[in-house]
Length: 162
Image (cartoon, rainbow, N blue to C red; front, top):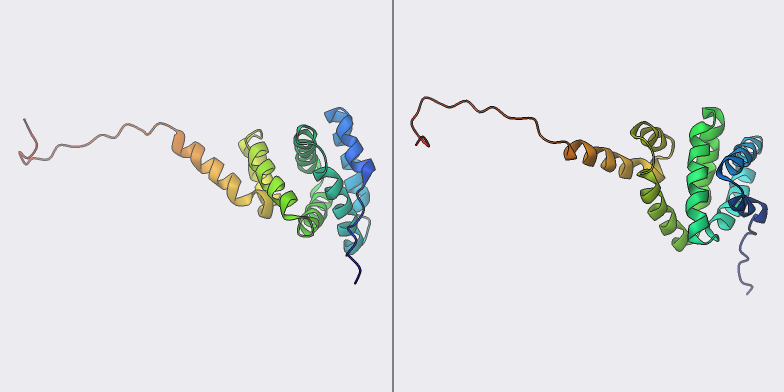
């Protein structure tokens, strides 16, 4: 029996981590736009190669890289973003459990760095990777607001009066 071979990593994708955030995001947008011209199965295969390379990065680079990826997704036209995010979600199902856990933890950390409007957009764009967590952040922020002053009317009964 032969061992199952892992798909290759896209080293050109992980090399974007060495660029400035602006240059990296421009290259990411270009690559994502190119991916949408591929049939879905090929798009997912390429995305697996890209994700494997991304999650092989050291954490310091991975954090900035993932932030750029999310910012790029927010800037993409919906016709490009939806199939790209869908391919990314399908690719993550083929990744190791360690990579999946990194994704969840990273998304939770990075979500706090986005505005409420961007978190809502990410939640709609990536419901499997952001949805419930972002709703929790937004709900926590609402609950953290000081409560409005409640005026209680005193009844006519003498109970509790001093």
